[in-house]
Image (cartoon, rainbow, N blue to C red; front, side, top):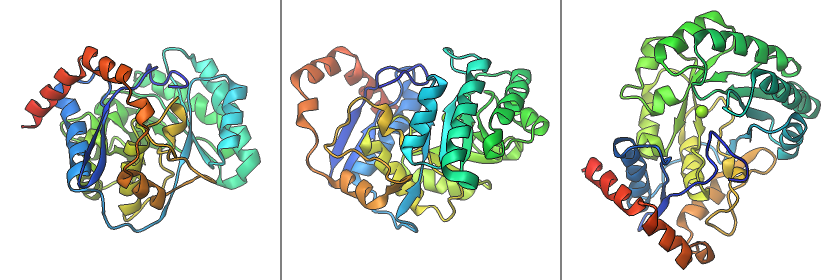
Length: 320
Ligand SMILES: [Mg+2]
């Protein structure tokens, strides 16, 4: 990672290649086999069946993601991205509400100056707040985003579905569910409990593009497609999903390639003028030239020493 993000400084994972093309399996280190096996299923689906799924759009609007960095750096990252929408990480263990507020304000001011009424700012707390903290923080951060008319939405302010539902009744800002969808035994509880206005869906944690598409169609709320700090392979699968959804009312969180210090393809998937192209994603999934230099003997040794081989074996057992 270029910058620490949701506590992560380094990403590790495996890529699968088959007659369908490339698939990525990079569950976060703390995920156990029951959760990680869905990521393997996703990679295996892409590599075997391929992701040639009918699309309804060729370009996917994306948001720029702003990690916990100082307000000036945040504003310049937002402006230089050319994206109209920014997602600002908040409630990180390295940030305070005051610094979150300064960062949100600085990003909102920069995007409003650049894109006027089309500018949007959303926040993601990764479930870090309790109910009362969430209501207080969302209220203050909504004011800090005054230049763009307030927050577009607040993503996963609290961990539990009940808390999300409670917070949603207290604030005017729409609530998005992320972890409550992808780390839950029952993603439909969010809808039943009226806990969110929209759902964040991610390819790998939901078991692949086809499973995510099916879930999106069954959820009765709008969805936004995001990545899980993937390489260009995983991001491309997200683009295929976003391109196939009948409705896509929000900019997607698929431009996170810039958060990685290195990638696995020579021409990484990057947005241009705030959009990602489906053609580029399809080319990456079908590409036969990965960067061999990054798969050197040191990387192979690290893979053996890191316990990943045992980890994949346990994912396979869980899938079976
Ligand atoms: Mg999130």
